[in-house]
Image 1: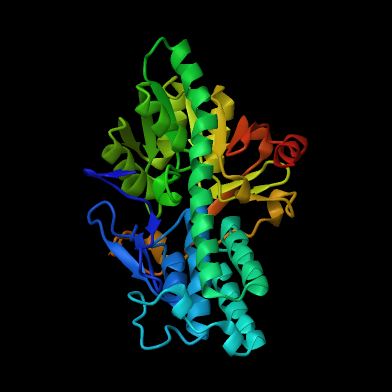
Image 2 (image 1 turned 180 degrees about the vertical axis):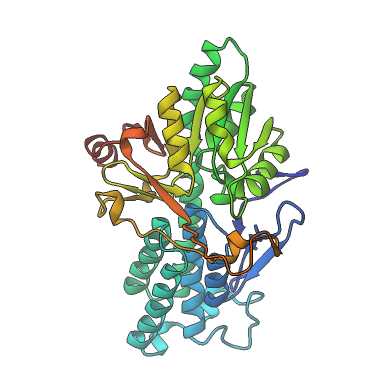
Length: 376
């Protein structure tokens, strides 16, 4: 998507560079646009854990490259004196056939499990890592793994685009009823292109609508404690020219009571087989307010975010993050010394509060029968 006069994706690999990938360091936004180069599985783990990269689809894509980089490390790195990340092609890396395949596989699996522990709530992370280790088991070759990671990123990008395609008619219908007046959309956290490879999930229909000339306006929750809304979503929308207004996290109910929100669009980090949605803390409160005021509440997600092994909200592992995220803002203390802190990173919105789910395969109701039919 657009950053200034250039177009970026949230993760990319330079041609000819087979030992690293590049990501945008989202911790620095919106004040500084910095690119991180990840050249080891440890750097990938740290980037995910420390939220330099975040968003369920993106951390899955980054983790896929982490498995590839782990394989390179455990097969000895570039052979024949090649420099990592520069003049070494996949065929130049020591092939697992020349090492103990079982040992190499075990070492990569160990790294893979560590990657999955970096952000336990987002199911895309485990899904992407498991996909890559399955490829590794059948084809212990750097070139094959690189192709698999690249393919996964391309597929995630296409899934996001299709979410936009399927969600666009919802905005078009509201615009038609309002006779061209702006469609007021409320979103929470960041579910735009920074959270994916490109396009986004909840924001994908918004970008497509804006690009087609439909008048839209987005209410952006600040999203405490890490402020992904104020720092990331607002930055994205402004760069793309989409009209938006930043609001405090607790203002959404007031806006809905006064008819100032036409639709709520949020992302999703994990969805149960029954249609319950785990997303950034505060999403549940928005759904309650939307339900009370008759405002449609939609969650957008790729099919890879469904966890069909989970059928009830209580089965989702909710990440608890560092207390300093709440005690401080950008390193400045805002709470009394010694105060106890609870910092749950996600909450679960029950299916009964969700109007429907927007996926890359189409729109469905937030109920098991509809979900399984769509995924079949």
